[in-house]
Amino acid sequence: MATTKWVLDPSHSEVEFKVRHLMITNVTGSFGKFTSEAETEGDDFTTAKVTFTGEVNSISTGNEQRDGHLKSADFFESEKYPEFVFKSTSFTEKGDDYELAGELTLRGVTRPVKFAVEAGGIAKDPYGQVKAGFSVSGKINRKDFGLNWSAVTETGGVVVSDEVRIIAEVQYVKQA
Image (cartoon, rainbow, N blue to C red; front, side):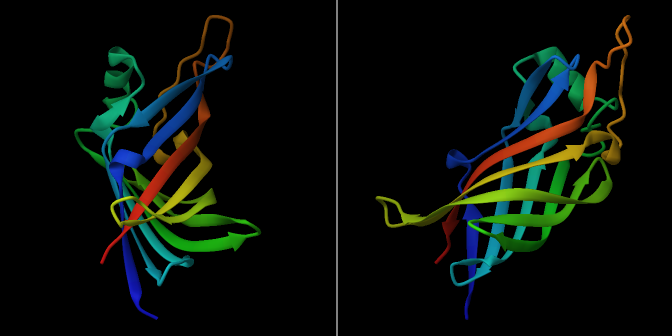
């Protein structure tokens, strides 16, 4: 079967993260600049090879001071590590959904990760483009990637949790 190339449609895709602050609420952030490609056999995503690259400096949490801190050496160290990269190793059917496994490189550290994927389906848009949509979610431990900054409140509480939830809505365009 022929290889099909799919390219991410950034205007119909988003990548967010959530992290506990003071262990009482979640702070949400997003990345505004990213690219991704998938290669499949025909339209069968169980054969997908996915790559994803995000620009660290496109991070936004709605707070300029916090965004600057996240870009600093305390967290992402964006001057030295301007991108984070995911490369899949498998895309496995799990009932009606999928599990996307691969290697995430963040701040120069590469670790295996797994994401749950809900397939939204494949449809043709009004302009004749064939698109495939997915909802992706998972968790990573930020300290596994060298994002070690931490502070403790006067009562002994943690300011930022180690667990980071990742949520993405992605739409790919089939290439001719």
